[in-house]
Image (tube, rainbow, N blue to C red):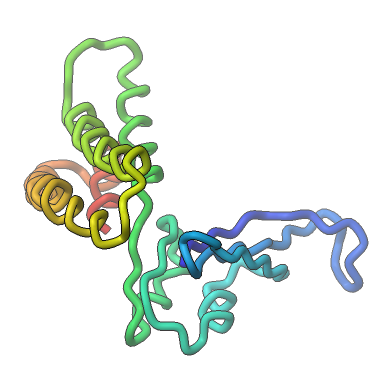
Length: 175
C-alpha cells in the first residue's frame, strides 16, 4: 500500500473555521494491474488516522518520511518502506545549494547511485516483466547496489552533521 496525505481547505464545515486545515489521506494498493485508490477525509494529520484505517493489515506500506507513519511500522506484520523520489529530492537540495560550484560531492554520488536504481526500474517498465522476473532482476542488479549504498551512507553519516542539508538527506535515506 502507498499512502500520502495532503492538506485541504473545507470552506463550510460545521464547527470548523474556513481557514483551518483538514487532510485528504490517499491509499493506493491491491492488484498492481488494477490498483485501488481510496480517499479518506479527516480533520487531522494524526498518525492515528492511517493506523486505525489499516487496522488488521499486514504487508508493506510505502510512505514519505512523515513521522505520523512511524506507528504503523511498529505494528506486527507491517514493514514501512520509503520513497526514492523523496530521498533523491533531499540530495538534489544539497546539489542546488552549491550554487554553481562544479566540485562533485557526496550528494552527487548519491544521486548517481539512485540514478542506477531508477535505470533498473526503467528496464522493468520497458520489458513489462512478470512479478517473478522483476524480483529476480532486483535481487541480481539492485540489491548489490543497495547494500553498497547503505554501507556508504552509514560511513558518511558518521562524519556528517545530521542537521545540515546533507546530513538530513543521509538520515532520511537511511531511515
